[in-house]
Length: 108
Image (cartoon, rainbow, N blue to C red; front, side, top):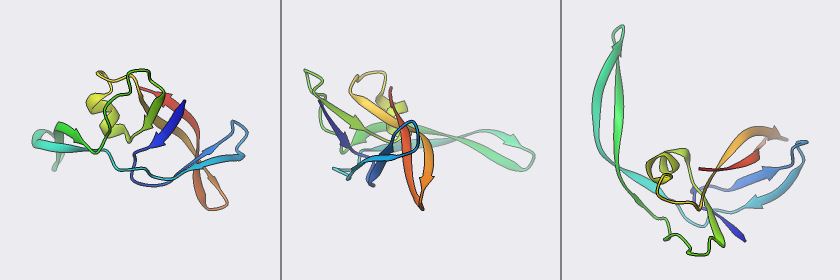
């Protein structure tokens, strides 16, 4: 199995004990196109908006054998995660000597 990073930035993965394990360079940048932004509510004088996403660009097609998994940002995962089984997001960030690492990869 191969795990590829499509967040647009390098990702560090740490062990459950907080030890750096692997660094994954960015292979690309998967991102959602915004279809529209709707005003849905107010908090006092502060408007609250909802982004309506359209399609995702920059992400390879799903591998039929699921031999390739793709780390994406949560926005992409929320947008198309229900239609694909090859997407991961990072969870539990920790600071290790000034660099951010993540302790978990979560399937969406």
